[in-house]
Image (cartoon, rainbow, N blue to C red; front, side, top):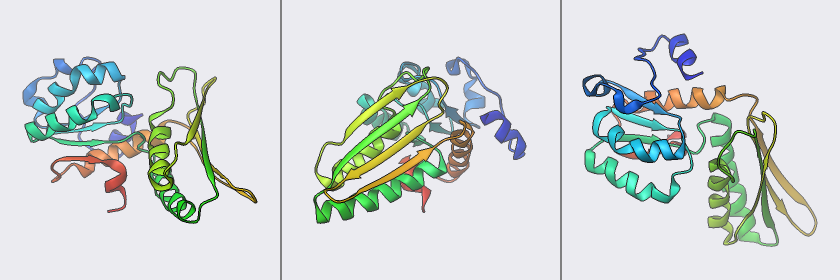
Length: 209
């Protein structure tokens, strides 16, 4: 899907590889690497990415346990990194709206948050990276620990619901992905953002700038 979007937009495309460490360093220096792999693969490869590529966009999740280490290494190498738990435009809007809602509800009190996320049966991590980001936003604003429930079934691209339960009413926000193409489109946008950008950035922080 990423390849399709790159070619449809007339962008220069160097190809793809299942073994990124086989990339010629001379080629890597001219390229932005878009990484959608697995947590283990990214953990094994991030040093090579930081040392060799002009910039890196990471949509792989499941490496939060070494995030500080990754950020420090990219900064040490002077390499540009944009990462996200979800590159969908709609999800990043949901991050912003969830932030606003949970700040207001945290201020007034009386509401308990919960979250349900649903994905295809092939997804390796649970809760999803997106759910963890949403829960982190809510928990930081409301001073609570959000209950997160995960469902793995069939070929569901991704559904995230954040709810706030009060004594008299309930507020819910839901994002449903129809396909994975939205994630790919956002990752390509992030790759374009790396031009002239330095340092390590989370996509949602760049999104509204």
